[in-house]
Length: 195
Picture 1 (cartoon, one colour):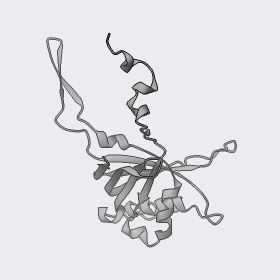
Picture 2 (cartoon, rainbow, N blue to C red):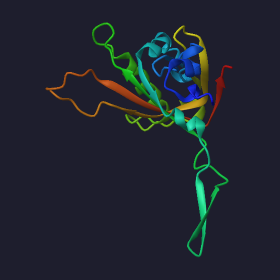
Picture 3 (spheres, one colour):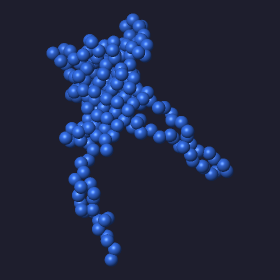
Picture 4 (spheres, one colour):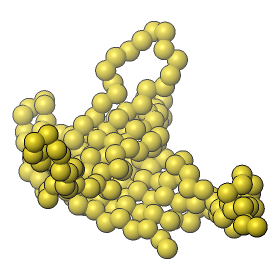
């Protein structure tokens, strides 16, 4: 008689159950910021506080890019292949921040990102910066297990701020706290996964 237990729905047949493997949780992460040199001295204290204001991160699928499928047709028959190049090799990361007023009126998260955006183009007077002005050396995202041991670390290099949104409107009937959404772009990164 064949062994039929391996496909029955029981914890004894599940390696993750009997070996006590812990699942990967999307809520256990931290983001570490390095601000551009032009604003580091002004926002030195706020640089560390930004980590505590992060609500969510998205765009990490960009790190697992594959080339898209292409196809050729002949007499109605399709032959598929992988294209030789990627649409883009950059990563666009979106981070949502909680906005809190420090010392009654100081919206420090918004002040940091407004100052950063002005390094590229200051809308108040038209001053423009060059890439060495508006990029930061790195942005690090670390994912951990429930004990806080890091199992994956992303370090994005030459990071630029490409968008600040979330302040579009106000509403007398809304009860939700306002969140700020910032988009960042990096042309290259290190992606380390523990083994």
